[in-house]
Image (cartoon, rainbow, N blue to C red; front, side, top):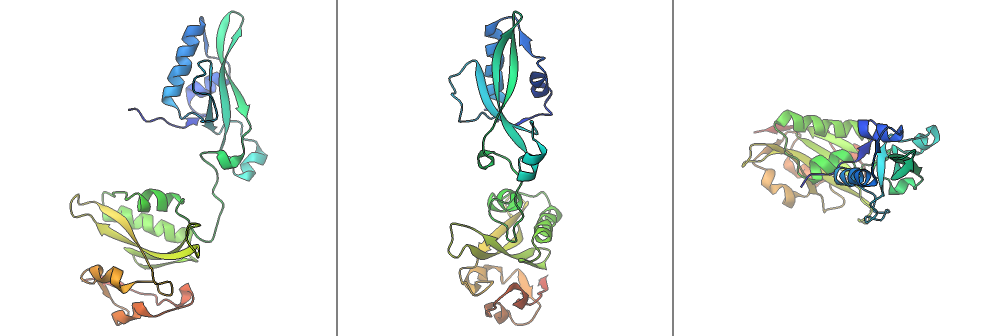
Length: 243
């Protein structure tokens, strides 16, 4: 099945509809075009799917005012309808004002902590994205650190400690470690994450026993990972070498 896409005002067809350039000699042909658009684009659930003469969809960069852009809008919903004029059936676009909370894409507010909706965590970590080589995975991990340096510590190129916000957890801030690891079956690299269930520690030794044969903790005895600390600044700036 063909995957539907979000509409973009830069799409030639969308721009043409906006400028009243799409018309048909018969209502039937206009309806066929509406049906084709419904099969190509993601359609709003707020519109009646059985409506053969119209459809509602979200369009990136569509009539976004300067005020809306400041509020985080990146597009707007629009109603595409068939309108008859001078013997022809035109497809027309009409903006529909819908609160930003219901938009599929909007500007993310800048927070101290990332949450699982952050593009890097959602796409590359939680969904187990397969990188073709180790450097691509390392670069992605490094970019996450650069975005949140106050709540993250890069132990090595392959390991990042970070605090993540999750409203499903109590307290909402929890600590994880993200590792660049090789998938032995495919040969690709992944960003795997592990929870630290011991709230006063960055690492849970039981969880990380499997990595003892892979990493050598060069900042001293391994027992240092059991030490409690109050803030990120209390964690040693560790250098970890592969054996």
